[in-house]
Image (cartoon, rainbow, N blue to C red):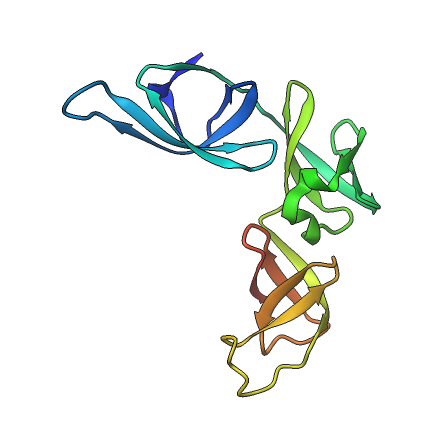
Length: 185
């Protein structure tokens, strides 16, 4: 059991039967009354964020997460097939479990998975991926009404905004957290 005074950013707790990650926290000691802790929590199951206030000293069960490296093998319909790189066990994961990062997965890519009590609860794709631009319109010089950006479809099927100078067939680096162009490769 951990107390609210032991909270740290990134810590995972069990509250109301669900797993929550502490995004932000602030200890407050008003001039009158008891101290309390303001927190912003993210639900691991679906990514929902709530703000909650706790009395100082309230106790919670800390959730222990095991991290494993999985390799993305292939996709069949809305199911992604992954393999544990140490035990070679295969797992089938629905698209919802991967979230928006699924649009940047390439075959044989390694992902970080989080397990709690032996159950897969979340998958984190790499922070940056290198992908090929499959289709984009040629950039028109002087067309800067959209701050010099144009849509591009990647080899993985995702569509992002890229600068006008990027052409079809080029390899680019994409930040999977913000789904944005970083640089040419």
